[in-house]
Image 1 (cartoon, rainbow, N blue to C red):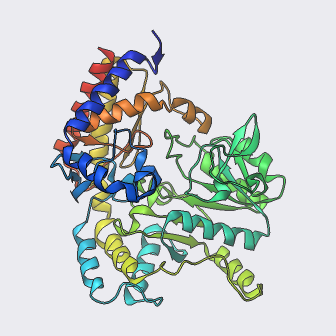
Image 2 (cartoon, rainbow, N blue to C red):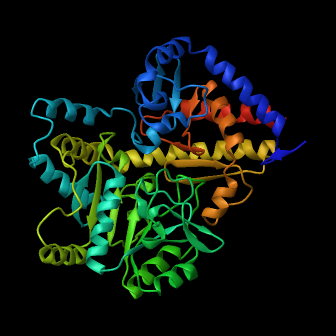
Image 3 (cartoon, rainbow, N blue to C red):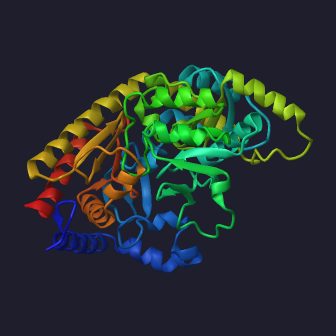
Length: 453
């Protein structure tokens, strides 16, 4: 009998079949509501990745508060997905809820700044380091706009990204490695342009490969997460980030750090915790407590170079903007989050909970003899169905076992624990209670018993 990551395939199939039946039986109202109303949406969902959850059909949420979600059938569960980081500080933090209520009485958007905007700018520099900031709606937008600046100030065309990365739906990062060559990433829908003209892919933790790419002289920016996420997590090897900084400086490229997920690392993100020195800094998702908001910042030197490039261009559209970005609701929520939610005290609480979860999952894996391991970055924990820590995106793709992971995710949800659908990521929020963590550990242990006993 064949195995996947040490688990017999018939065990996986059995767990998946039982999980689907249990899920369906618990949600008659959800199923009826979808049958009555989902047909108005393309493929039955408001956004296509809502079908990427492994359950037979999407759940419909009734309420979400703190670290708990309840669906319309009255099923409540502990939420460790937390909007894939969007609600990393819990659902509807009280300061953000108050800010939304107050701002709603003063208008939602008007293309002009507010006093909240001024205070939010000060708090951004206080939290993440002195930069010249801009506000966007999503991290995809922030990365896209910041790359325009990088190309404008360096007068170079390409962005260097790491094989298997994800930086939102920007074309520039949609390249991968095949037989050592950069290719347009397979699977892109409706792709017409040759993305190898604007992107080059290297393996994470491969400084020699990065230097070879930079030596060609056409790379405007290195765009990277401090830790590879949105796949199986890959940690940087000692000296890797120092090496990136040195190589970017040597070859005249900008170092661009995307902290949209690694904001879980601690107060100020991985950049502040580990003393990184980016030229451009990007963070999104949870920075405004769940209100769609992202920020991108330029170092003083890059901001000066941007001013020169912007002053020299012809008048007309810059390619950066979006009308609803930098709206007053974003600033109200950004200010509340930075001042009252994204605090060192909350991060310390999250860190304690994540350590508890890491130890419990690791103990369960060892107890059952699974050839897996657990990795943690601050408040972010992930079990990986692979025996050793991962080095790069190729190994991360190898370690991703969809059939096994889908069965695991469904089994955990049926035991009252929700984790991220795209990988095995779990987040601890300030609202997450020790009892919730212990329930997840117990559920994980029970699923391993089903699979490996």
